Each structure stands twice: as structure tokens, then as C-alpha cells.
Image (cartoon, rainbow, N blue to C red; front, side, top):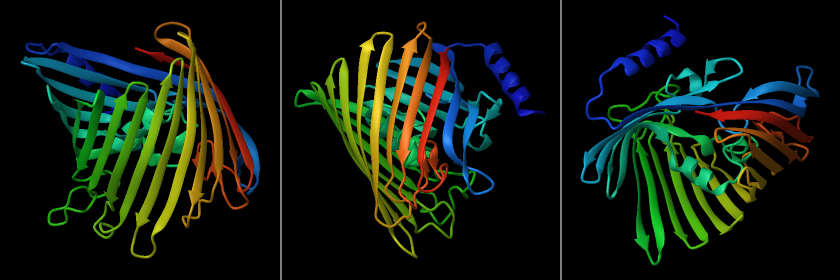
Length: 355
């Protein structure tokens, strides 16, 4: 049976099932498709050309999902989310072909926070979403580091906040027993370090200022690589001067492995301007300072503007330019997507609707 038929069958079963204690089961989603043009894209003859295409998820990944909420009383509840990402230009699944590749978890909500179990976004994802005004649009920080849109299998997550000194202190913590059980081996008996991930994002917001700190560590996701570590440290700030928000962020990456340790730093400045309730503009300036990863020190300038046609639908325009040095090949869509040493520019215009 084809996967599309399985999705339809599963959805029909959900609709047909009787509901007793549940407060709600919500079907939701986003469909986002854009026309894109990018120059200096590597070609088969080793040179560069301009590529014109449709792309799915220019501003946000196309997706659909089911969200369950049940009230248990006394401030307690049950939540569950199943969310699938897909390529709307081809009708295929994202996330390596996983059916619920974006999210697949269940949890308890309580007065002191929310505990969830399953496949879910990491604290790196939450940190980047809070402090990169262009993210999760494709011409933004994930072009430098895919971990900014990462998820973890086999994970336990806690999110909660408390009042502190006139502000709000929030904790976002995740532990994974094996963050990738599809391309890796997953949890292994007797080798608990295989695929282990620890991810913590602490945020403090008071008045117009927000400050965030991040730590994330991943062990290699095979038995042979379990002693390798990828560590990310982050710090960021936001100042809300409505209708303008200003951002600054930093991420340090240390890849510790037997042969050689690799290090790089990523810096960014950003801004968002809510021009009217229906029109806003966000921009980023990102710079990587590479110590020895071989990726070099490329600079990206990006911006996205969105105009609401209705409460659910908007049109957007996004553009970015990457300044590469002789041996760097960062493109607007990530490393390796530009011919080395070229100044690459990309632009797209898209339509996004939510349901």
C-alpha cells in the first residue's frame, strides 16, 4: 500500500474514532510554495549557472498535523502532536521519508511546566526561532548550520517558566537516548553514549529585553563514533522597541573527534519591523569566523517581507546575497550550493496559507 493511501486511511480512522475525554483534536497545516532564482549554482561542467525553480517552504516548511489536547482538571492535561513535513512541489515527504518527521510526541501539561516524550525539536531549534528574525525562512542561519532546525528521536523534553526579579525565566531542556534512529543505530544496550543528545536553552525576559543562553551536545550516532562530540554554545539578545525588534546572536561550534578537533563561530545581527498589522519586514546579517573546519568565513545578508492577504494567507518576497572568499562555497541554501569564491544572490516570491 502506498504511503499516501496509508495517510488517508489513518486520517479516516482518526475522524471515525469516538471521542470521550478529549477536549479537542485539531487538524492543522501550512502549504508554502515559492518561485526561486539563484545565480552561481554549481553545474555538471564545474562552472556556475543561474537556476530557476519552484521551492517548497521558502518561508516555512509545508506541513500538516494533528494536535490533541485533553483537560484532566486541576491544571493538568494531556497533549499529543503528529506532524508531517512535505515538499508541496512534488508531494513527497521531508525528513528522510518519515511519516511524522517534524514531530511525534505525547506529554503532560502541569502548573509547573510541560513534559513530552517522542520525536521533537531540540533546544537549538527553539533558540534560533526566538533570536533569528528571518528564521525559519531558508535564507537564514540554518544555511550555516542545519542543527538550527534539528529534531531528536527518543527524546524527553521539559519546557516551563517562573517569575524572577520582575521578569520571566524560562527553561527548555531535552535529553535524547538516540537522536537519529533512521540514519544511525539508535539506542544501543551497553553503549548509552551512542546518539546521546543533551540540549538546554535558558531564556530571561524582562520589560523590553530578552536574553538567551544555549548549550547542546551530541555524541556520534554509531558505535564506532560514539566518543565523537558536537558541542554548541549560544548567547543572544533581543530588544523590543515596537514596532521594531532588534536581535544579536552568537553560536560557537566545537566538533571533538579522535583525528582533530574543529571549531567555528557564527555571529549575526537582525531586525524586524512591523510596518502595519498586515505587512512586516525582517533582515539578517550573518558572519562565520572559521578556525579550522575548512568552511571559511562567508558573509550573508538576507531579508524577507510578508504581506497578509487574509488572516490565513500571505505573499512574501525573500532575497539574500552571500559574499564568498576564494575557497568558500556557501550558498543561500547552504554550504556547497555556490561555486567557490563567487558572490551568490538568491530571490524568491512565494504564497503561504495556513489552516
